[in-house]
Length: 208
Image (cartoon, rainbow, N blue to C red; front, side, top):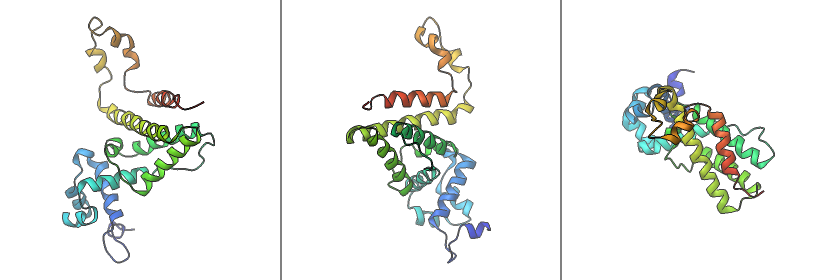
């Protein structure tokens, strides 16, 4: 398939899906700071107004991109245990975010009522309800899981650009005795273990 064919439907028209694919490619090349509707238009070799006709605003484009990121989540072979299912869904959510440069920063702050986002939310809430949470607890626990994973992945994706010894150099044992005591456990890394620890803490509030 040629580049021209990839961005057009059977009638030769640019599709919204192709615009979002191009936006994700720009994200990969330039990061979130370099993402703009003009950059997407340049990648597609079309006018910026053509891109805006499909996505209306940059904010709407970000919502559609966030939904596309969640479209990378696989729902096959999920555990039968609802608690383990929550953990697995959180892990797959993390991997979907990590599959895109600045994926967590992109998704943070967007609230797309779009198919992939709704599917993930429904699966996560279903597992929490099946685990014994009431409606309010399931809703608030789902938010907590999502906030936790987004924050963790934002740090994980920023970690390669952060010197590992910055905290150690900044902490003064006399001025920051508690930080000094635990500093070895605050360095970037061990994200799988930190994910598991955080999920254990969140799920410990569910009914036994």
